[in-house]
Length: 318
Ligand code: BDR
Ligand code: CA
Image (cartoon, rainbow, N blue to C red):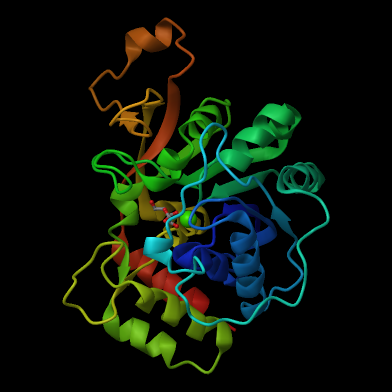
């Protein structure tokens, strides 16, 4: 299996991503690290521990990470994810504590200890990842790739042009993109499209297996938030889980290597990912060695049916 670490802000759809990663036989989830995003970092840690217990993976180490972005105060998305940051499903408190080391230390330890290069899957603001890459650059030798949910080619969600994870900590995203590690951007454009139809959500909710049932309840939490047909009863987006599907089954997305720049200037474009799709993108800038320009494998298309099927098969597995 592919060794993976998820860095998340659990989070309704982060929880869907964790359930998938735990159950996919081709993935070896070695650790989970938490960062402020959808809710405060202590809430994220709680939610993450609860989901892992529910998923039957109580031994995966969980690290508590950054409380706030590099420059700005934290701004939660509780209006989207509920007051507990995870859909207010009334889940029990976790029975264990997080690791006794912080997220960056845990990331470094697990990356360097892995017998095979690790794929990092951030589904949250990139604060922990930026701190890791700046503090312990030696980890890059054992990172296969970063596959992150964040950014957008066309339209944003946190602002008209910026996607939440990048908008929440644009400096961190800029650091991660330019670190020289191969990187795939599973952005909002594909993220929005992968929606599980209502009858399938209904079927998951009826399961007697706790992890499978939780996936159904999470998918039912916010029918229209992540795209899809608002009329379709209970249909729910896979959201962040799509980025984990892209690691388990990379053939399901179409990517193109393109220059991407994060807009850092204050003002209405802050946090936008500017993706250069010109026929000979950014050539002069690359030759000039402008360090802000990163070459990123940007997901431009996704096989929706393939990922929905993959998700349903995987989370239906005990
Ligand atoms: C991203 O923001 C969060 O609310 C979701 O969990 C996802 O990671 C989408 O913009
Ligand atoms: Ca998330």
